[in-house]
Image (cartoon, rainbow, N blue to C red; front, side, top):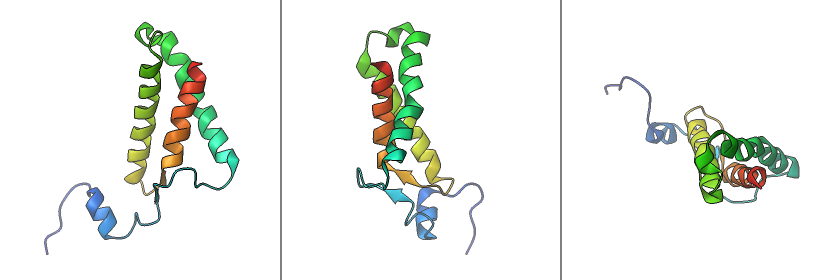
Length: 103
C-alpha cells in the first residue's frame, strides 16, 4: 500500500478514529454556563468593531452577524484538522456574541 504525501483529508482522520469524540453536533449540550458566556464575550468585540472599521457593515446588522458566523465556522473547521473539539455550541454562542456586540 502506497502512502500519500501531504496533509491528510478529513476522511483520513475519521478512518483512524481521531475525530470520533471530537465533534459535537447537538446544540446546547455542553456542561456549564461559563463556556457559553465566555464564547459570547469573546466575539462581542468583533460585532462592535466591525461596523466601526468598515462603514458598509454599519447599516446592515445581518451582514455583521453573517461575518461573525463565517469567522466562527472557519475557526471550528480549522479545529477539525488540529485534533481539537469542534462544537456546534461554540458556533452558536460566537454568532450570538457578534449580535450582542453589534447591538
